[in-house]
Image (cartoon, rainbow, N blue to C red; front, side, top):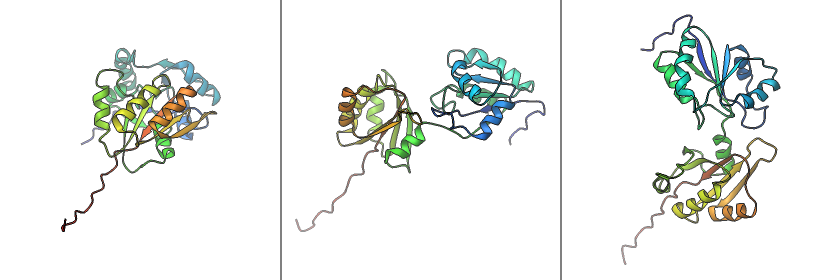
Length: 242
């Protein structure tokens, strides 16, 4: 049975923010950002641009992977004292390859209400825009840089679901080459970069084709890599007279 929170206890709001285009924010998100007691931001300088755009004057504090373990206890105490807090990342939905999970889990452990607003996240538009199967997919986030990377790729190469990765521009060529090695030369791949921004681009082809493209034109911006799942093997009927 769920326990009811105390009347004076605050709420942690997980608030998605635009991944590029500042118009991609909900009315509710703006309302929450205006109404909370303060905002936790991955980078206060980045969030300040958003707040200024929507005339939101609110106190901000930095909350990121380098300080979340030290600040969470104090934030829990503020929530228990009745303060409402909004948590945002630099762009998209917090806790999706961004800070947020640790604080949200701590609030749940302490019976503090957490409300997650729907909103922007890069992986969904990249998936839909890829033209690959959307009925079943797996989101991997960023691959390990070294330890476990090869093993993970070999495992995912056997997955029949569409696979989605986040990747940086300086590692995308290496990753595409490894996709070709482990997933095969015929596997379909798309690269979406700078989603919702002025120079948004989606490229489709094989990993080899995309490697050739990026070696001629160095990629820039944030990247979502979408890879076709392992195709089903076509079983042929044996001729019983042979």
